[in-house]
Amino acid sequence: MTLKVLEKKHNRKGFSCGVVELDNYIKQYVSQDVKRKLAVCYILGDEDANVVAYYTLSSSRVDLNDIPDDLKGSLTYTEIPVVIIGRLAVHVDYQGNKLGQILLIDALKRIIEISALVGNHAVIVDPINESAEKFYAKFGFVELKDSKRMFLPLKTIATLFETE
Image: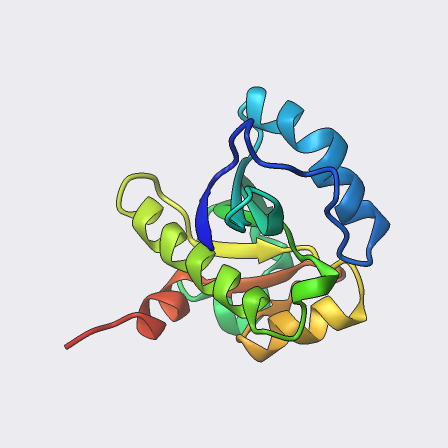
């Protein structure tokens, strides 16, 4: 299986992760978002180009007042640049094999690379359900104030990938 940017050859019709919103997105809407440059979609495909798993990345901003006080540090701007992992899903036939974790790590590595070119302070996720919320919490994401959105500072991510 290989992880690459969405291409026309990828077969998305048979994708099913058990969450209708995520299934519909990859089948019906992702091409529009990619074409409009609203998101980049990374696909894990099998040897027949069937989508096994996917995630999307987009840029955005978050209000400084939404960030937990202990994570604000010396930030003074009212809006902070972030990268959003908009969707992350694994086909039901492949769930339980740590593919979600592999995709998240890949996304975080890409975000670290992006940060060398474009300023961003953190990663934001919008967990679709309680299971997703628990998944992201295991990796250190914390809830933003008054929101279900979750936040992980780039500084924290960088420490995960430090090499000596």
